[in-house]
Figure (cartoon, rainbow, N blue to C red):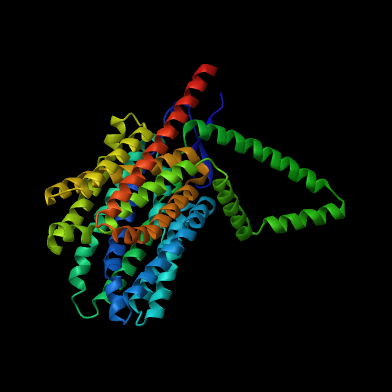
Length: 471
């Protein structure tokens, strides 16, 4: 009986294992590796949240206006829009850990340059590398999806989002104290730079390939295909070596020279993956993501101004409300796996119900008459939006396949970036008519997404019924 090849490779030699080892993939070190990725997500948003809230204030101290501050934010958003899919596809081609290292190091240099920026042009220049390469969250999610089986993905992704949210909650607390010191913003920028370099060290230490998750069936097929491909390649190589025609030899050398260019090969592979994404059937999922992201951003876009105008509360209480919503979101990430199991891993149904909750709470918030109702809405929205983001990411990865996870997550970030660009504009226009206009428009967009999800669910049900009849 043939021995089968294990996915683990030590010192370049594949170890053989018995048939019993194929029943269930074992990775005793994978939990600690996943925990390290949680740390990467926490440190990433911890560092970013120290700098971003103070950026507009620093621009004004340098002599810039509110328009200039908005322009800096728009440049960052536009760069993120166009670079998310490309960087994600690049991680599919080159490897998650390598690209994550590149993005962390370049982002760290960018924040270091921000720490020495004494003028508006230098500050804008410092933000450009961040806009292009600051995709550490999306690449970390793609890395996690490579490390875990599909049924564990909602729980792990939820915990990753929770860890990142904790970093985003704690970062402004520390930066608030440091900002009161002389040169506080520059100190904060250098601390953020140092955090990114520490994060790069953590990623460098990760034994990513050693614990890469490959399903048993796929591994068996891959092993046999690799063996067959290797035999065919050796046979073709032998035939080419026997060819004495100088013309054929010259052509072979030219072909080898052209295909040996790794940069050109990577660019071609990235282009093919993006082309495949454009021609895919995932546009309904991306449309749902866009509508729900735009609805959520419309709700938060004028939250401070609306609550202050409607209920006359102090800025301190509004700050407590925002922090409370962030804490609820973080706690929701920790229980995402339990909620998914409660729904028997029916992700589309969970997404539909969370979107209905979001739509209802936005409607209730727009007609609220007391601050207690606002607190209730913030509680439910913190839960529903966190679960919804987890569900939509899981649906994209499930329908897109294993070979383009970085491309899919990057495309999802690009869709969200479009919503970030449109939300302030729509909010400003609608708010001219009514202070509660943005959340009402958000509720209408969420309702449109609900109708679209109902259509998707009916199509999937018909497809399932057709498969059952065929069998």
